[in-house]
Image (cartoon, rainbow, N blue to C red; front, top):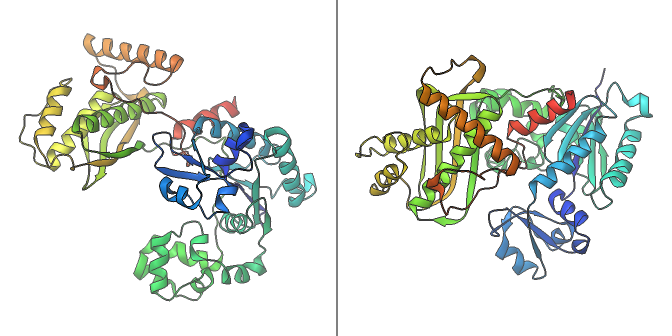
Length: 438
């Protein structure tokens, strides 16, 4: 049986939510910026896009194009709440609803379309409920096809507030007029390499031997591109009620400006380590492998596997410093647990340990194990520390993340812990799955 797959993509989602909740912003060009600064526009309203403003983009460049542009900080918690309301609408028409990102969902309506008068009728019902239950200023574009690849392509070709269906016999015609980058999974770099091979549209992929694609891109990517050319995508729609498997936990942060102060850099690293540890504890997980990534004038990255399982922010931080020390052959003494200022002076003395300035930081934890299977420590000091951490977590849960934090972070800016656009934080997905199941 041929599948009926829907891809629903909100139009200018972040900006539309801001305009829906703040009426005086409606019909005006607005640019939504990240919560940690006003330097980068991460979303533009439909009115702003008419001036040629794109996202991501630099704020000062956008304001040159459109001096009347209104800058609005992002409110990711609010966007996630709207997204959850929309998912709640979609589930009334199929049990197979997959959250692809905070503003995109897939639906498999193969078995349920006939119950509601067909796929087009489902689209109209969802549109009406979106307007009546969430807001008339928030719209979405719908793509219909027989697999996820083509349904997503279709929704992108009829924006905003559009509807397009790609049937099997129409694939070649649609491919012939589409850009390579219109296909999910083909970014600018892949497109450039394909163009160097003489491939300029998705249709051209159909006529390239699989062996040539594998020779250029490797086994996995080559097969993926070959299937794209043939319009093949067997991936199922995975219901959001199914808990995702958690293989790693990470937190990335882009600083609002180039940061030269090593103490502030270390404070940011420490706070990210605390967030990663908090996510681990919320997921009832511990880790053995820690990774760190710093990007600035130079790029520094590495990972290390330890002999014990960790779910403590300070220990993860110590692991990150160990990676930096080992990578840059720091000759200072290995720091002792808790001596953060010693670690600061140790790393700061070595100009190579941290790049001259840092703009982006990432902390990663892998090699996870369920906390249930980790034996409890027999030492009173460890038990006391674990109990103290539970108390701190409960206070932060009640009054907000980072209400209580380590003294090393004194006078440091608090980072906001919010869902990101791709919902990479599995905790939010798992929490939603558990709530829906309950």
